Length: 221
Ligand code: G6P
Ligand code: MG
Image (cartoon, rainbow, N blue to C red; front, side, top):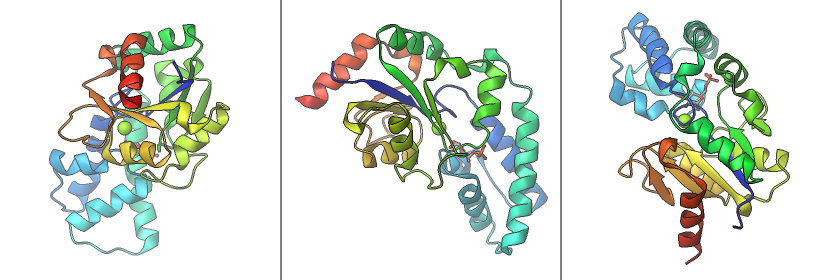
């Protein structure tokens, strides 16, 4: 197999933090009298904190100044951190640890590529930091997905060229980032949403090395 490294998004791939982002944004939206729904929340997946706030303000047709926006983003993050501080290893999505363990045993490097600046806290809470050879997150990159920076950075940390990397992503912006990085991309979720991914599975529980080899072979055909 030509693939040398697997890079995982965090929120929605390894852990289900989307519900906590939603609850915290919903609290802010309610405070601002903005009607924000779970459908709107789909647009925030994989998108940075400030870009998410801008989407919510756009829904409410509000145009606060930058200082006020910083205040709103900090408030949302305070509520979000309260939720994730209570996370436990039970919240790791099914199959993730098993698949990563299988990859490592096969000598494939494992990295993380997430926009979240809360990545270290989440990894610590659910106890899986040790599984990753490299972590590229919102604390070390500046450009938000669909810019490829986060995945390119993870590949560099893993000393692997992008063409030998595969990305696992649940967000449309994240799939685009992987493609922009020149990497193979496995979408996690629905084929209807992740139309640009090379292959889509509902969750990592359905992934194993055999399947990965098959996906890689089909790409080359
Ligand atoms: C991930 C999530 C987004 C979130 C972003 C920033 O990409 O999918 O919904 O907005 O991280 O997270 P942060 O924890 O830094 O606010
Ligand atoms: Mg995600």
